[in-house]
Length: 471
Picture 1 (cartoon, rainbow, N blue to C red):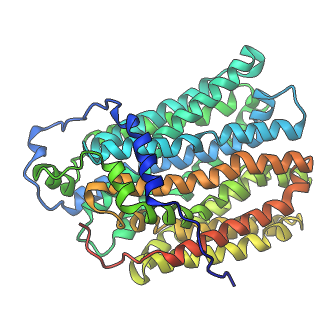
Picture 2 (cartoon, one colour):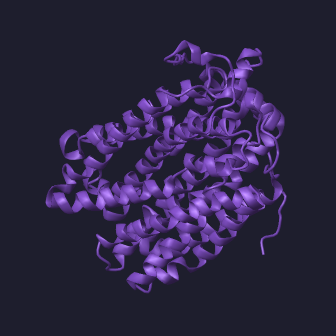
Picture 3 (cartoon, rainbow, N blue to C red):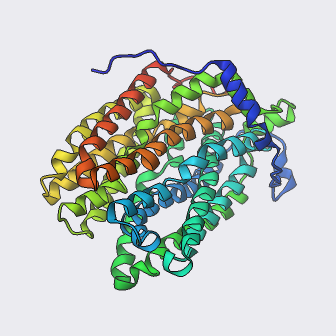
């Protein structure tokens, strides 16, 4: 049983200081994307179900790009980048450097949440969501075109990290904008959790990433390390362009238009969100830290770990595909459950299931039985997906329209940063200290359980939002 412990939360004065220090970020000029038809600007009317479906499709494409990149990059970091970008160091160190490069995007995700959250609450959801997916597109294609170490030396590593950071910047604005946009469109719906689930279509993206990586690896054979691994990144860029075109044709959120017409837009929404809602922002970020378990435990770590047990390297991605396929109905089912019993209860169930799945993960994998390895992957990923389903609605409903994109986005991305620090810094350190993934497995399991425990405590402190009006 996890006992509730007193949290050392920062004082409001400290967070106000942070807000003042980051004000310069909000002076960056971000052009407003004007409606294609001037008549879209007014009057403010209740959106139709068709408009809501079109919005969900556009946001869903961006969400797929977000998770698709995270997963193909994790596959590449485990199976390709050590040889392509870090060929002159030992296996353990090259893998550690590769994982650190993969996780660099975690560092700029809160920065993206601050910048795009600020402008999303000032200029509108539509404007920022177009620029967000454009940044992600450049980051994806840039990684796919970056030459290896053998061609340009250390400059290749620098370019790899720069493009990962740029992708993280765009990614940082995706969740807040998407969840705010859909929540405001579906403000009167009793199925806000269901509509918002498409902000985080992780299992669909994971299946696409794993299948494309496995198929291209098989098709290109020996050439996979030279050019084959780049193809999934370039395909992701095409998907991002499709998402950008779809978003450009959409209308602004009706609630934001009403806010703008009443001249009630906040002058500094991010600063205001930190002043008014610093405690919920921090607690929500801690509550969702366990959502990083797939990045901490499964990919890229488990791919190398399974291979170290003597299992075929081509089998490891198959286990991820199986987890993704099972995760799709769990994602949708979790959203429907969240609309029925509440967001808080659903995510608490998810965190509790994650504790169990982490505890049995390595014992199942260590059997080297293919069926049990697949089961281990399904349990961890599926447990997290139940919680993923309600996170967008739960986060967006915690904030008012005038600060919704800033508050929801920063909450989510701080949680991602916490799990990212574990992935980028702690995980590689454990691998290097143990001389490989095999010796690090026990410590990785303990680390994952601690993450789950922290999230459970934070969830218990937070409030339920089901049934409350969106204002």
